[in-house]
Length: 366
Image (cartoon, rainbow, N blue to C red):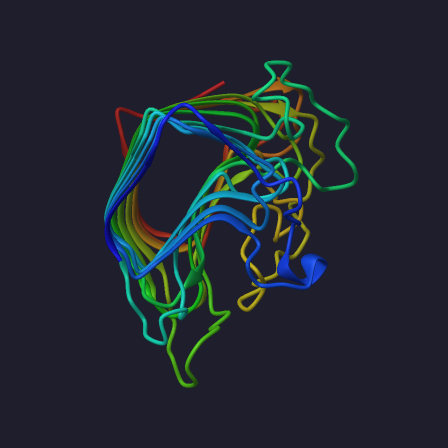
């Protein structure tokens, strides 16, 4: 189908849509589903309780999503194996799953990439369902480790890959942070992320190259490279399993990542865990916290190459016994104007099997 528009100041209420097709015993459990479409515009309406997906677009090209308000019980907007996509001016509240999620699954029986995507001027959050649209912004107590999700994510379905993606001018509140993941053998490359503010988030920045390898047999691990992330402010990030991380796997490093003008305030309160072994979890579902409590509170980098940090500041609100930074099996690290708060008897940075470290305008520690 082609040349489709759904516009207007109305509301789709999926009151009988469940969190999954298993719960509802049917596969059509989405507020809006698009398959192999082109030239589609979704604009100016709201969705309440959207089911497994509020919007699922698969193999859909030339897609515009503008000025939507969504309060849903699982994923908000999912873009799978699509090209030329513009998502702008949307408010997405999805406490139990992702807010805006890019995928490249095998749903079309082939590995088709998701390319040429812009996401701008959006807000994602994890308030109680319904409380975005009614304006109350309620927050129920967190149960166990189930912190509200509500984020912007690439993956985990990643057979076809992701190329040419830009995210800018977005707000995250009471949810997970950015997640860029490729674990099924595909490329994730050429991404810029700029002007993001976050508050009360888990793991502000999470990059993962793994080897779950869901898809055709004998597929090899993919690549995650050429990522630029800049102008990020995050306040009151989780302390223990909320460390930002950039983690590849042995023999398959994440490459060419630049972080600049980033200021993150963590809750702090962590204990010394320097002697705790960190599992690789190569085949595990990629998710912040998958390595449990990391030995640093700020940024953990492992199995990577050509990592640049410029004008970076990490702080804690409560004393944290862990260093701010760790580099493990990393080749070529460039640090310039890195301000890493740490306790007087704690090292600011851990280096393990790391080569070609450059300190320009010496990194500050305090």
